[in-house]
Amino acid sequence: MIEEKSLDVEKTVLVGIINSRQDIQQSKEYLDELAFLAFTAGGEVMQRFTQKIDLPNPKTFIGSGKIQEVLEFVNENDISSVIFDDELTPAQQGNIEKTLKVKVLDRTGLILDIFAQRAQTSYARTQVELAQYEYLLPRLKGLWTHLERQRGGIGMRGPGETEIETDRRIVRDKISLLKKKLIIIDKQMATQRGNRGALVRVALVGYTNVGKSTLMNVVAKSNVFAENKLFATLDTTVRKVVIGNLPFLMSDTVGFIRKLPTQLVESFKSTLDEVQEADLLLHVVDISHPNFEDHIDSVNQILKEIKSLDKPTLMVFNKIDVYQPEPWDETELIEQREEKHFSLEEWKQTWMHRMNGQALFISAINKDNLEGFRERLYQEVREIHVTRFPYNHFLYPEGLEE
Image (tube, rainbow, N blue to C red; front, top):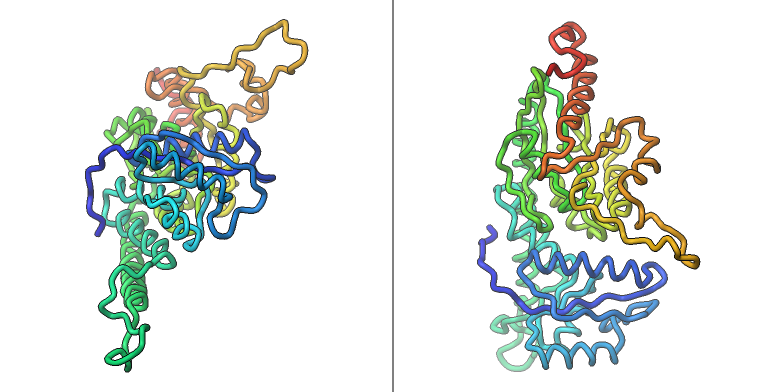
């Protein structure tokens, strides 16, 4: 299993590209997110490098001149790792490591590293280990030579595996073992979910670091680990919540992130199962983040892929206490006033106004507007509960009693 290690702060450098699919602004946003990921993993970002390049270099991803620039900075500042914002092929990663002589990671490797740090339960650790081995398989390099049979000559003839074949066989065996283990745990978790009885299930979904666990702690009076870092939650937590006299189950799930590689989707399987089986989704959004609308689109895309986009959903706009619009000069004649200059009240009159009361504005940490949130949540859960058990609707009043 994965060993928990204490990490010292590493000096890192970030590398991103600008092309037709991501302009300068988007590239900056992605690198900001990558810097937060690096900070979460225990790294300190010393410098960022970007290059305008339409097609990545098949050998080194970025051009030779830019690689030289990165190499000079790495040597001058005692940098221990270089992190690329996009997925590198095994060949590219090997070539860059040869040139820079330091550890080279891509976004996928970094997210896997954070997952390995944060996984607590046996299930999450097994999932992360499987994702790590699948990521490692094409990147294996021969690090030992006592099985080397490719040199030829006296004493080197005959059957035998090369070192790399042995490595691959060991990793493939480990992958098949972990997959079998996951099938058993999946059955156990399906049984657990089936034993939860007839209670209405509510799932918190949203981008990573939007405040899902904090909201869970406030509503369920629980002590789920919450921290201002990406992927603070990696294990799905379920709590029984009672509002008024109405009991229901609330699940805190793993946050989603942009540019999520395919081999990591399996690591979200337990979360996706919780979401698929939920009766009501609470889509939590960090409204103080400048790109919160992109975050909403990313989460909706994943919900669409798992056929859960049409479930009853409440949009919960969190962190209203730290929302700050960008200042706008009223005398400005050239630039138009954009969404980034909107106040909270103006945002409430945009597309959010057309959601028929399905948009709520709260601050989970300061408990602002929390009573309104509890009232709305009660109404939604009651409606599902009464539909399912029409004979006991009289037990639950239409509004929360003061």
